[in-house]
Image 1 (spheres, rainbow, N blue to C red):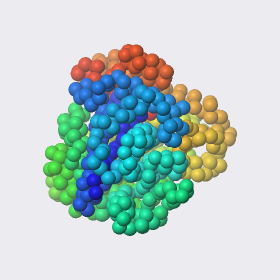
Image 2 (cartoon, rainbow, N blue to C red):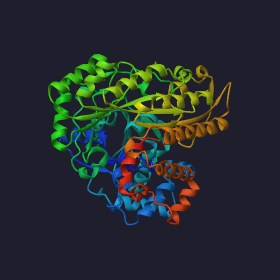
Image 3 (tube, helix red, strand yellow):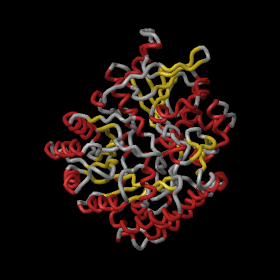
Image 4 (cartoon, rainbow, N blue to C red):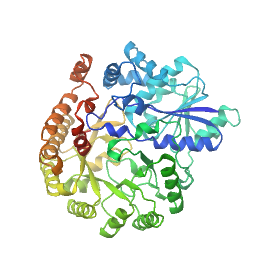
Length: 540
């Protein structure tokens, strides 16, 4: 069977500093492609996130770049969400925009189209593309990916133009779905499948597939040269998964749903990394594990395997505070580790305790120092606006940043969201909150603190806290001596983010050709390394 796999665009840009975020081949789609090709199916991959959202002034995928940008901003209007869910968008500009995207890819010669969906913004775009595709040709459409696995059940109306969704790992379910479409098996034999029958949604039994059986991803057919970026020394940043699961039970997170910890064999990891390194001519890897240090012993053995086999790779990965000491950090550095990503969330022990993070700010500071001392760079993630977080807690976070700025290379600030499937959402009384109403995206809910702020005040507090921390990061944070005199960048960036925080202003500026979302490419070349340095120092 001929299968078209699509990684959708996103309706939201990571403005200003996030341009490199699109510059990585889609891992899940690469795994599916490898699995299906192994079973003799023809697969063509399409990375529309790269083609539509990746801002490159030297590439012209669409006739009118500014119109593309205007329509992307337009789709962020929450009032359009219900219409997108139902497939009832009538806006001629948006429809023309979707047609332009579909015209840029070939879908006519395929028997099945699959969308690999990682985020909500991609979900919206996938719905727009699917609805228009159904109006053009009668082709089965299947949705899968992390977002669908977690939240797909919240959008039953999409089955008016989406035929199937797959929950969890998609390889074998997609293979069985192809067998069903070829009249080889009944639809009831397709595991992890959700579909509509006689007006009702049917969910087939779930099956589990071992991580060890996962094939090495294949990115053949994707424009690999376009994934090269100046941050990686003009190499391709290659994604690869070594372990799965998370041993933490953070109250705000949805990762706890998959509490089964799995570890690939060292031989498999070394063999597949070597294959990818040679095949794509790059030694830069991003290990897309939830946490690489769920097991100290496994991590040490992994590093030993990298060293003994002389893999000669550079890599970054997410880690938790814990299972990291000077010994293992030195070994990680020797094995090629360049960046560690930590979810510290807060510098306040009170907030960390309420989150069930399992460490103190003092322990976090010590780990960051140890990592820095072995010349591994640290990126930290902060979460502001958690229930009952106070201005005093924010001040402690700011103090943590100031005290440890020597050890922190990048910071990413998120505003807390009460998400479906999280422990907070499942047990609101235990955390002294009450859920009020779903937000337009449905998987995020507003909330009141039972003994504190109502949602309208909590929302304002989140905005204030995020900007307060951002101001500290940009104006008081440590900047490499090479860039210490380039003081104008933080000012430009702050103005830029303030402008882009207002949807009406964005639409007006883009419509009147005052603002170009390819802003980063208007900055002189000598400032681009500053952009790279500050990438991540923005609010999402």
